[in-house]
Length: 186
Ligand code: ITT
Image (cartoon, rainbow, N blue to C red; front, side):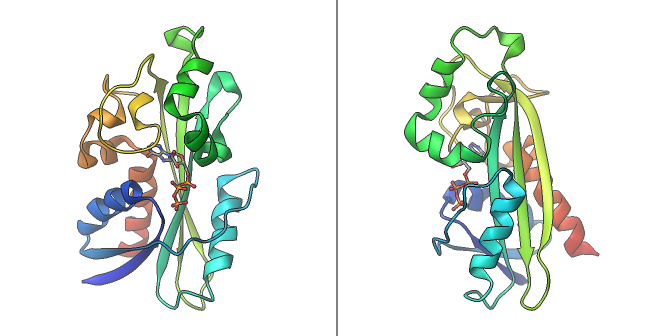
């Protein structure tokens, strides 16, 4: 069994990665090292900045992830500000912003960028997206962050009404991790 570090403060992300990578016999170890995140225009830039901050501190293969929720009628907000927005206005604040918006126009996409870094090698990025819509109220108590208000295309439940395995089948993170798994298999 191979061991890989996942540098994250987020237990939900960690559980989802652990579930996916167990399938290829990888053990994922969470390391909450508290690296700085820049305010950049893209998730890719945030992820690369994170790798640069950590590469001299972590002498073991590691992954880190930057993710965000992009809402169509809000021109992609909260996007790269998702973490800050979640911790300030939260799901309730997003529902308020969309109060007047009819169901068909509540489209959104979750994006995930994983960076994989081995000592003395360049980082490799893996991107995943999940299209869906914002519900009209919070539903479910699994998961984390905006899970109670996001319904992926192809289902009627929010992510928070799914278990980890079900969410991984649809989610942005499940898809970026699939690409990471393909990379490890090669
Ligand atoms: P890290 O330590 O890994 O950075 P974080 O929670 O700060 O953990 P991000 O910087 O990637 O993670 O912030 C993205 C925010 O977007 C996160 O705090 C959630 O509020 C939200 N988010 C990202 N992925 C999500 C998911 O799968 N379900 C619900 N909300 C999600």
